[in-house]
Image (cartoon, rainbow, N blue to C red; front, side, top):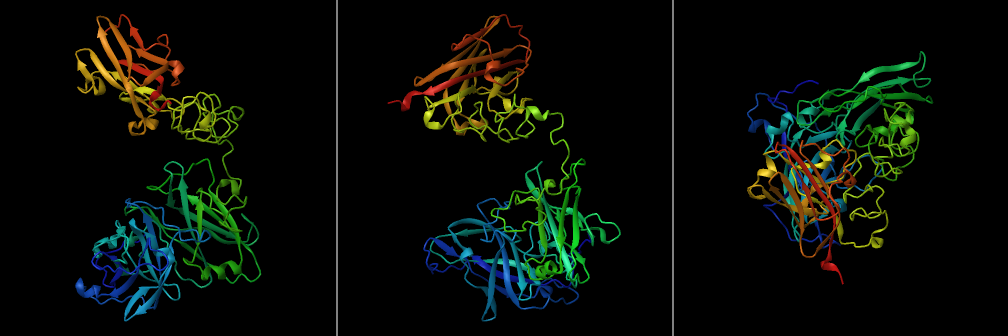
Length: 557
């Protein structure tokens, strides 16, 4: 991708007004007193004079027609979860708002989609188009080469207060074709190079490794007769361009100039490629999307905004997808994956006997906490034997998988002694919570908060602390560990309102952990509140786990 020099003489900057704290009105939003109407306009300034450029520059001429706006809710400036634009069929959540000329300033018409509840938002995407769908102005984002040309690049915080009609200033630059990466957008959703009778494609890839979607590197092949046809090749290995020089990976739209297709059907194959610095593809899998196109498809794309076909590979299904959408979905599951072209690897779970894994999540039944439900993450927030995907009461641990009202002692939880080793970080299947204490002269065992006397520790005993988060649980008492001669005595000291059942202890004077994390593996003791390890050799490290079922009697009738 061509690099952009920041001293370009042909840039121009505009100030677009988009809710400013310095100017507020008390006009309520018609028909909805609890929502705040956002209105914005435009004011063109002379960027070249301000920056003393040597050569005059000019914006692309055109009459502003509308703006595409992307807004996220909340205080996370890196969020990509845009507010819904109300159109599930367009493949994005960019809100289109018409513009009007008000005394020389371009302002937006009223839009219900920009009447939002009070709260904090972030403006993530802001691009102004002409009446004939050409990009005129773009608000640069942090990380792009043009960031330094504006005072407040996106994402920009928007704080809406009830009872006001606020305005905020958004700096934009004139759009320069083929300089898309300099604006800092995650993908070039406005890079559509106008070619007569062209068909344009953009691809996102959702990578399971990170759970995020990326602009994709891809190539396109086209045949007249069939996919992978014989001699009737129209295009072969046309590739888009990618760039990782900014804060976000970026990729371009790829436009293919076709002849007039008349009544013919052409066959398009899109193949995803590795993108170093963004994602890695499995070399055993072919990442292919195939679909036919006709002249009617090319003509229809010219009227689209943005004017390209947007493919999202391996991404979450589109809700209520319309017919023939998304492009490349041949099995009608509203998403595009290798299943649509029968190119998935023959063995999706290498080393796993399919007979032991009927739900296909690559977790054999003997270690799968939902053997009949696909849940490769094995999430289990209450720490019982049933994963969240199949647990009828996922927030309350139970011996049997029953609905919450049927669980006896609904104020009972699994409890673990606090420690400096989280059990879900050890090499165990699943994701159950819990701690172990490693007595090694570091961490918890030397913390004065817990080491109350020489050879005496008093450590919290937490219940219901799903995912090892003590803010989600409650303290059921303490565990006292005391060195008495050559012995080490471990005692659970519950609070007065707590009853303790099914105690389990683990102690190893070599610092080893049990082969399995299930409480049955902590098989020391006789079920009482204490256990004594006799004749300890005195050589660190030691490993300790204390587990029990505890019940809070304060809510008993």
